[in-house]
Structure formats: structure tokens, C-alpha cells
Length: 198
Image 1 (cartoon, one colour):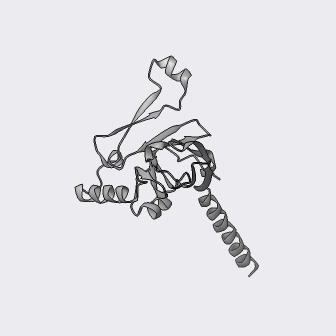
Image 2: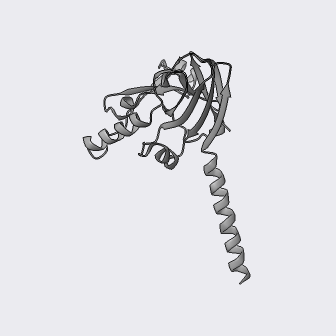
Image 3: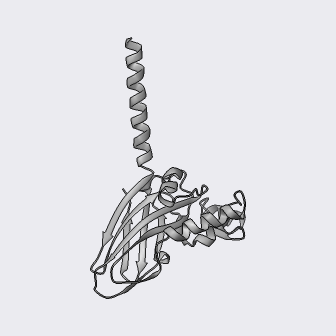
């Protein structure tokens, strides 16, 4: 009977530990100035991305839900292109990408080669590598459905005096990263801000 109780306790402790680890795969951040306030949640885990997007993405993508509130009283142009995702752990940077870049079979995304400058000099190869887009799923119908979901949930590109909210997509290998390793950098009409995830 004692062994059963011990196993139950260990099982509960393990499940709590796993839940704690999973929470570190999504993070929250906020920053603001006199022009606008930004709140963001970053999703690394595939199931969290599915919950946010309503569709599956393959490995190699990170999604951020961004809410921006303009405070100036005048319209400001806000766009997904204003955002860059930065890894403080390995220095990787990823600019926001469009839904069509994710679903296109001919798109090529460039990513910094993390093997470093010394490696590039020794091999005479560039410091960037190409990362192909996702493979075709079960056909054009599935790709069309994914594209529709990506576009529907995407952070808008528009002038606003109020609040905008949506998802921003990044091509970044975060398989060895946690949310606290990432920061979302905003450079746009509202200024320059860094949202550090916790």
C-alpha cells in the first residue's frame, strides 16, 4: 500500500513538472511609450500554436499574439513587418513573414547560420542558410485552408487610432529555446520597443 502511495505521489510530481516545463514554452511580455502600448504572448510549442491559430504548423515556426493600443489620438500605421523576434540565447533573429511565405512550396526563408563566423571563414561559405517552406500536406485543399487560417488570424497592416490584435509569424528554430530566451522587437511609427518574454 505504501508503494502505491509513493508511486501516485511521484506520478503527480512528474505531471506537475511537465506542466511547468510546458508553461516555459509560452511567454508573456509588455512594453509601451507615449505613442502606443504593446502586449505579446509567444508560442513555441506545437499544441499552443494550434490553439492560437486553429491549424497545425510544422516545426521551425514561432507565433506571437500581439495586441497594440495607440495612445496618440492620431492614426498610426501598424504592421507585422514592424516586428522582429530575437533569441538572446544564440543571437538568431527572424523578421515577420507573410502567410503566403509559410504555405508556398517555392518560398525560401534565409536564416543566420549559427555555426558562427569562424566556421564561415574557414569554409568560405556564407553566414546564412536557406530553409525551405513547409512540404505539401495532403493536397492543395489543405494548403488553402492553412493559408486562410493564417490570413484570418494575422496581425493587421493598417492605420489605426485604436487597438489592433493578431498573430505574427516567424521562421525560427526554437526547438532548444524557452520563452524567456526570446524578445520581440518593435520598430515602427510608434517608436522602438523591446518586449522581453517571461
